[in-house]
Length: 266
Image (tube, rainbow, N blue to C red; front, side):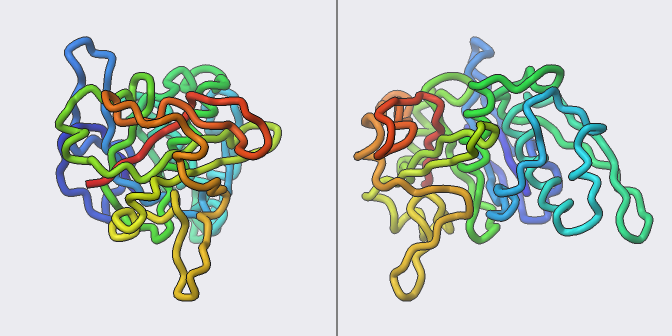
């Protein structure tokens, strides 16, 4: 599992342990805009295990992350990625757990994207719930494969300003939005119909769905694919390379949301 900040990249292999460790980082001169390129491999099943509540991050209140079994592995994976999405680089979430053989495992999960850094000490607000949910969905990989992507949003810290990132990652695959902490958990995805083949060639299947040999489509666990982004989102903003807004619940409610994350590939 890994995630990284930056507008430049370096190799991060599957053995990388620290989610949020920057493989390359560009911070704009105003120190506010951070563009993100993320190596993603969040397990599909882990997305279905919401091991966190909206209160301040507190390891003493999260019994799931100390489970020594398979459910504990998924809970820790979920928490690790949630921390990398929510907290800033330099912020950490630390705890330890004991396996079935009695061996203690200290864990240090580090922040990266800073989508809701105040969660470190206080409740995750509604915007944070939505943006961290979108981030987790965008990082989910059907195969568990590490793929470098450009992750973008209409506002900081994922607002893309650097033209080089738009040039190097020109193929928008789709967008993700939702709320894993709402009264009813949901995550939606839409796809760019022009880049489906490119996305699948890069082992990225969660926006358009995994294509089976019989041409049926598998969704990525909880992620509900609502169709082409052109039908549910406003057109991509050329300056930010991101969809400005999408329909919260296509086919049910015409309300639009700006709390979305657009992903792009080489």
